[in-house]
Image 1 (cartoon, one colour):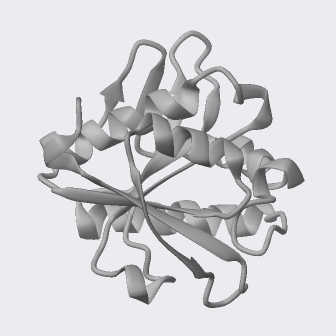
Image 2 (cartoon, rainbow, N blue to C red):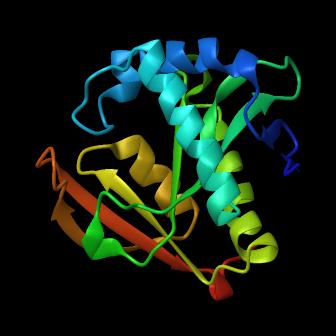
Length: 177
């Protein structure tokens, strides 16, 4: 089983008891404001998403990790790698993403988890490039993107929701692990 430990976090595959805390995160309008069309997700949608993430692990050898706080065992959110099939012009690509509950914002957890995910992409999966796709206006994600050393690549619109998107990229051969 793939696990990554950072000083404060455990990035791991999903457990059955992760559904309720992840569903709470997905039900928060502050979290979902910058995801897809900005609407909250119900627990059934979250369960299907976790199932898709686990399938991607099996098919691609990477996916979204559940992110657990080492100190408390709480599920803080998720981060990881996925193929952004919703954005055909970005393909072929692997994208990094993250989603954390608001009580975990502003503490550096997302940056810590994302940095560990880029190390995983380079060292364990041999990827040479990773992109990030964020909605224009999502300043918190833009801040993480800068911390990761990712560079602006393009702007486009979400093909389904029409919301403006920014694509950033990093050449992992230049990534400072």
